[in-house]
Length: 394
Image 1 (cartoon, one colour):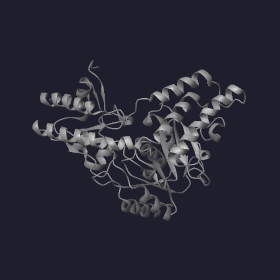
Image 2: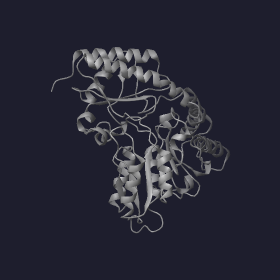
Image 3: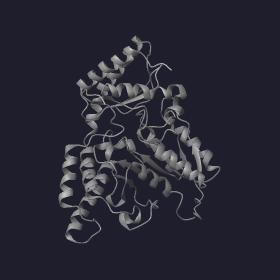
Image 4: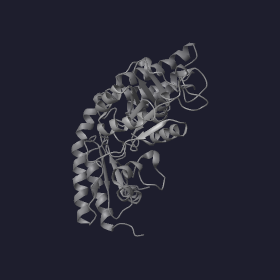
């Protein structure tokens, strides 16, 4: 680990907890450590934190608090959202009720893997090919729904609000309109959008997934918010917590932190908008550096994107090697989704968009609320030092 000042440019992987969040968690540990299901005074104090988190998520997503289910994070929320459409009435013996799911291969792994598991249990899964720009064309979604409808009624379409690797913003409102016109629901994974974009980014969604640690809250807690009338099905079984949809004792401290994070996330998107200038400066600088050293990078995700993310492929480098070199210089970036880290395979997102060669060379930089011009200048200096040494051989 480098002794240099850390330049943290991996905010899409996780965000540093905000001081307000840490204070809320510490206070809850002291006064609200009881079981939220208990009816005595200490239990009621703990329960108040659970309901505060539910209220804050509802306000953040534009849903009703009665339709917010607290989960262990975005992954569980995504699984809960996909599962609900196929295992209600009509499901027999672990097999799905007749129905189809439409999605693209550039969704988060928690969505893609869940879709593959549903396919194993009889759901007709139809895949939408992304554009090379990283955007999902609504016309392609409509065509996929038409193909899927030849096999089974389309019950659910799922689409990210903003891609976790490229930052590309997806046309959620247009897809919601066509999904609803065909009698399907739309699930939106808004984990990378809440707090960074305004609510139009998930407008029209019937189900919305969020995760606390992407908005400066604690890890291990998230939520699925739904429109009225959406009937969920549990993926875990046990007690009656979360109306039986997510059994297990809730953590009042995590809920207190989630509430604080969700409340402040309602006003942080303007700060993210300001980061576009820093991101663009860094991209321009890195492009010039790469050109001087014979390795001009290629940008992945040329469609409109969130203001704080840059994904570049570097000829002559493997993404994980460049990330490791930067880490030794005290710059934290990533070579793909944190949920796919440690695997030998290139990013499935970039494979689907631009092919294997560029996917294996990709590095993602993601800025955040506390990123400064000094951070960008220092990252540029250290990046230049690495490029001056040349790419590793072999």
